Length: 209
Image (cartoon, rainbow, N blue to C red; front, top):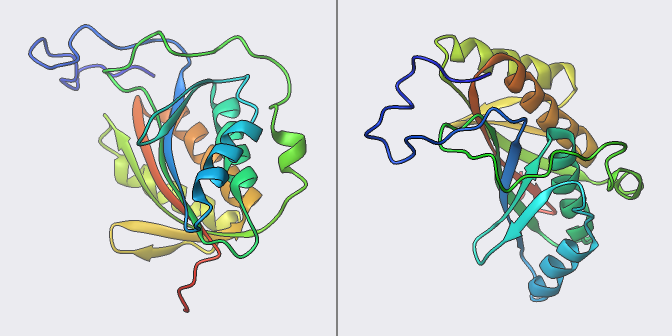
């Protein structure tokens, strides 16, 4: 869906003249292993993850994957699972997005077909994940109904959603959580012109609850 009549394409805005009608979804994220060996964990995970189905770029702050949603979600999940170590506290913070009026047609890979490349390897590993998320459906008046529906999706998925200040918290197996995040993105791509799904994943937290 494209944004129309929302004022996002005014000529005085920095992204005037930009935008894309291509099927480009993206996720920008940062990985934080709380371990003295964090460098090899991060670089090792990046090396092990098959990014052949997405356009990718890493810098000192973050990594971005761009392409079709199933492959973007597969690459992010693959990287997180490849970085996981028993007993090592680790967090991944990121945001999925599609429909930004400042986007462009470039820096994307959209011709991939077939199974997601990290699916088979990732399916062999299971561990519990905590997640907080905040959804921003843009360019629609019924945004609060969109957010409520996503909450119900978490209930239906057995992820025990709980309201916390400024976010929703869920928990479950790593595959359940990533399947849910992808399902939320898919719903947003079908119903709103632009969305941002901000999320934080945590494993092996030392915090006692």
